[in-house]
Image (tube, rainbow, N blue to C red; front, side):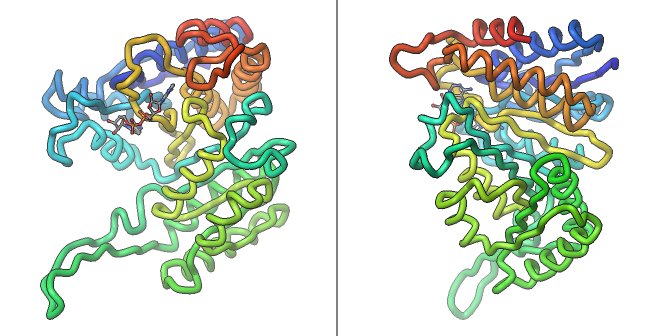
Length: 356
Ligand code: NAD
């Protein structure tokens, strides 16, 4: 394949972790006969410095012209005093909207050799943990009508949670398609005992489930789901939920793995287009020191090969290489314990390239 990527290194450690990821993709290209073309563009703080805005039109155009987008992270202390609407992080909301990224996929996996980092008791995650949270990303309360008004009781503020059948159907289909490639189990999380929007959610998810007879569907209320995630997380395969519940539950699920430098994510549009990025931010406290963990971004590239390009063997090769490097005892400082071989960002990237 000839793959054209828009690459947004961003700010802080973004350029460092993206740099290692491109090395890994080049190695995959060499081994499996693909070419990767990288169109590097600016978004976030560096774009504010260069263009006076965090998401220039030229960046949006480059992303739309690409087959997929790889992003490092945006933001940093330098831009912390800007008003909310002008901050670097607004670039992320703009990209989601402009690129129609309605499905956010966040896997929470515990690598055996990093199971010590899990804050839960060992027996709770014994045998491994492999969950994907599928979060609806462009609807719900974050995008519903909002405002303030004067009432007899004084000022009141409101945000409206609202979902259309179309929005629920398309995110449910992403979840069921994913479950078919994994453990064939979907847990839909809502608050249907209280919210009308959740009752619509539950009804539409059930309709979608009929098209996937091999997949088991469970419904959980969000309060119970939050408890089950720490009580018995191995019961989950794919969790599908709304924007706000997914925001919270995906962070909870990822914390079970204990290491933010290891967590990839994907945001998908229709037609397999996607933007891939690590869950972590730009980590300004460690930027430029060659100590950031590049694995979350490298694993995001593996998700890209799998979900946008259907290159399953290549995706598996990246994940196996990351696992081998960890099994061989190499660690970046964020996940290293005493006695383990601490390596820098570049060395970690080189080791993964070598393992491929
Ligand atoms: P952060 O994820 O950047 O950092 C939190 C802590 O984790 C820091 O101590 C950092 O050093 C460490 N860390 C993060 N990634 C690491 C890695 N790959 N290797 C080793 N250690 C790592 O979160 P924050 O400090 O809250 O935010 C910093 C900036 O990033 C802010 O401007 C924030 O708005 C932005 N941010 C951007 C994104 C994004 O671009 N998607 C996401 C979250 C935060």
